[in-house]
Amino acid sequence: MTDTRPAQPAPAGRFITIEGIDGAGKSSHVDAIAQRWTARGLVVVRTREPGGTALAETLRGLVLEQAMDPLTEALLVFAARRDHTEQVIRPALARGAVVLCDRYTDATFAYQGGGRGFDLAVLAQLEQWVQQGLQPDLTLWFDLPSELAAQRRGAARAPDRFEREQLAFFDAVRAGYARRAAADPQRVRRLDASGTPEQVAQGWQAVLASLGW
Image 1 (tube, rainbow, N blue to C red):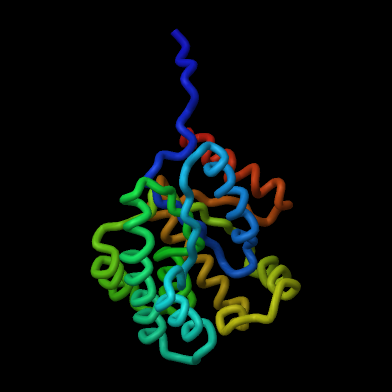
Image 2 (cartoon, rainbow, N blue to C red):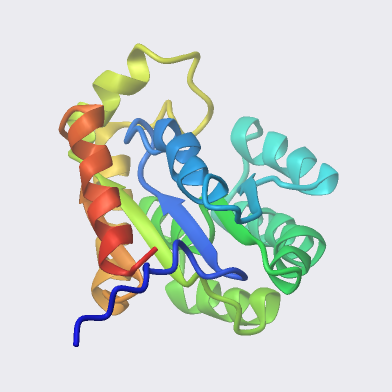
């Protein structure tokens, strides 16, 4: 007998993150992803990292604009994440909301671990202390070549401290994301972000549909 019950749109109390190098175009899809679930009556909390709280947004400004060594950078990112996780993410999940976050810890392993070459073991320890086991239920990784991302960034806005880095830095960041995806392929789903917005949207729609979300 065929099961005709509709699939669940996105189970409440789920944590979804959006990742990718600067210029990948991920942010332009966040609205549509959120609308997919709000149209089905779910509460969606949209947020970002670094940021999401008053304290974390202040730290974001420092990280994006002030020169600092890699350890200081990693500590500030995780300090912002701790406040964000405790003040926004955990309470929203406890209320049964779908949390949709533009970047989370995968970005730290990609940017500070890959791009800066910082010690991955130290990052893993900070991850354990700060998150205490919390991980996204799903991560959509918008992936594209660094050269194409640079072209897109150049037409978008004035660059921050990270966006002014050379292509070799973004190649290393991209490799950092690839390592995270290889380590947890069920959670991290790679999307080819080099196509048109419509083609990219078809990619994340297919992932969500495969999960019944």
